[in-house]
View: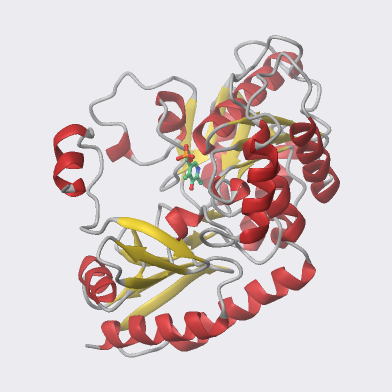
Length: 387
Ligand SMILES: *Cc1c(COP(=O)(O)O)cnc(C)c1O
């Protein structure tokens, strides 16, 4: 059976896949169909927070599978309630809406911002400012929020009500807020798909101040940066701000689909019964897995994440063939003198999986990757940049 051939024939052509079929793994090691071993520094795009087939996560998921796999939101379910409680206790935010993906988590945040504008200032205050070079998802509305024209092509008309400001340019943001009837600001603190660019701390503080002055809902998209990825539980904690809404997905589920929109004081009562919903949202199996992931992201693990991050920055920063290293925690972009695609291909041949972000090589290793495996993989990446 040629899986690659069948996939090419029957799966929609939306993905330019690497020529590898992944079949199994353990922790940060994964295996292809020939049994070849790889050290995985991509984790399925920051999803497998504790790697593959992690025992603790598996036990949580299988334990729930043995009870009930789905209830719908017509009924109460323990994993969903406990996960919401844990998220609120760890963040200080007040309530959580669960969905199944990052895009949906952001859709909910966008609804919250619009409802906030309507309630606070009137129905025509519905514009949300996002950043150029951002990425917020693939639905039509989250694509509209995404400040990259290439994503809008072919799918116009886009959802109205989004304007885009240059990152780290507070004056442009102020001008946009003054010239539009705005209800919210939404941004990623590290632009992931946009090339792993961390925003300036000072700028983010200014955005928070502006949001308060202009009574705008401050929405932080932590779909990729969340759940320990940047070395704090959520990246906004590192920036010292208090967002009104925080969205997350990717790593939260540890490998199963779940999205969460966390609503702070200004946003917790915007939704009433019937104003949003999701058939699968907060699914018991996904929520049980997510709860096990969240419980393990403690101070000790976060310190480990920061130490591994420092190691990577030290190894690759200023290395031969490396132009720059960007990002936060274990969300890192490496700008190489060589073409990123070639470096990725050569790493793959030598048993290391890394992915791309714009023109950079992107590293998103498991939070608990053993140091020895990380060292081995970074050595290979470094050599491939040097060549
Ligand atoms: C991946 C990503 C999304 C979209 O998440 P999906 O689960 O693919 O819908 C949204 N925002 C950011 C910042 C992301 O990295």
